[in-house]
Length: 390
Ligand code: FNR
Image (cartoon, rainbow, N blue to C red):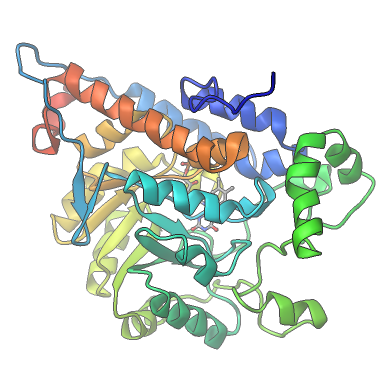
């Protein structure tokens, strides 16, 4: 008998969801989701750095009631966790961004809309919940400012400006797997897609059936895709190799909400962010997808927390796969953690239900870790929960 899939999807940790995702996606889409850059040492280092940190639990504490909620930018969140901005979610699931946004809203967590997404930002905002918008700047800055105004009008409360891709990252695997941007059918990728019939019908087929076309991912300002399909529009390409502090000041003047600079690993850059009027930074090496051989974000965190001294909100991402990673990041001073791949594994495994599974698993793992540590709330999680010399 064919029944509805169980809510657990047969997945008991993020690694299970990752395997589901890998099996379902064509190689090219999987590699876009999963891979880093060059020799992927930055990606490996993110995990090694989390794994190196050891807990030092306390016993004989009453942990019968554990509160894992927190507050960021004046809003309560069910966990110190938000969904990171990730492009091309629509290639992993039909209208993937909407599924991510709905799952986040139902879990009481913020969702960050990527400017490299495959849906219009207004349509994503209409899914409800607390939404933030991430910006890559286009060559024609006026196009970017227009998107920023639209994000504000649509109700986004924070603007995340991503700084750690001043130039294009080196994704060598794209040459091998035949998936350029935008994706065009060729001898390499067509057999790959045909070998994944569930994806072909569930994603590609639905776009062609419902929308009459594939979503065009990346490099196109939200809202310009249709006009671009008719003819190239000059300036509609990401280009921020000339972005400097003045460029951030301009955005600060334009954006009335919270401003967050994403992709900071040096304490001096965190201080600069403060000087520029930012409300937060994301300590991140872009999940090992920008500069290979960069230090792990979790290793960069303590110096940045010290540099900003409670004067701004500190987010952390890159390598988070377990609730214990979230607890470690909080112990080292992060206010909130973002997850990129963990949410996309869930999305690719089962759409909204899969993302919900990711978020449920992470929540359960956070609660369990705190119980084991003898901590009832975040006030009781600090450097003391980690072994000395970590
Ligand atoms: C990303 N990331 C990203 N960041 C950003 O600022 N804008 C974007 O459009 C994207 N797109 C994107 C796509 C995919 C497939 C991934 C995996 C990541 C980076 C993302 O926001 C975050 O920094 C990392 O994903 C964090 O690392 P983990 O959680 O993936 O290990």
